[in-house]
Image 1 (spheres, rainbow, N blue to C red):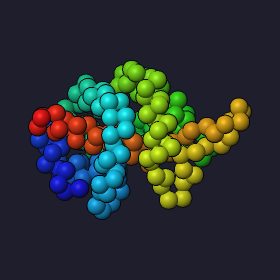
Image 2: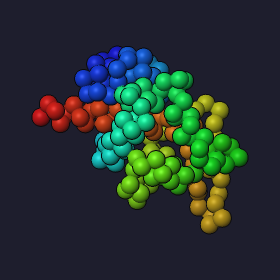
Image 3: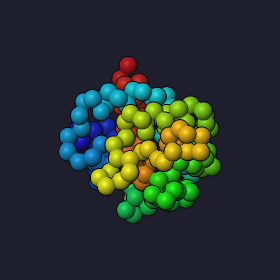
Image 4: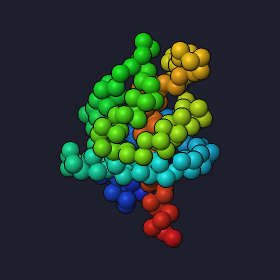
Length: 176
């Protein structure tokens, strides 16, 4: 994770080392980041880049902070306020449509269909449930299929992974 911190500074995603490390920890957990995890960020990269561009606009609109500080300062207050502004089920998990509506309401993400596909992909393949949580799968819906839900830690990871994907993409674009 330490090797990614200068990149966040260089690209204007963070001003403080602690915020950059906090984003990396929320995205991938403590310790080293497996190369496979970084490779998997390529799926739906364009959606993640648009998400982070929208989050950066929101950060500039609402504060003077860079995006990493915007979402992680004050004990992740912004991430908490976003998550707890959504309706959640009995297990404390939000439906993916709620996540989609949240970012549309915040003016962050306008491409609803592509974003919903990205959310579904992430909950099926990428996000690891926090210990003791029910995971990203919810109860059976009335139609008989699985209803996708996302917990607080998975939501935090989703946002932070998109930030890391944006960072890597931006570095590659600048270097090419």
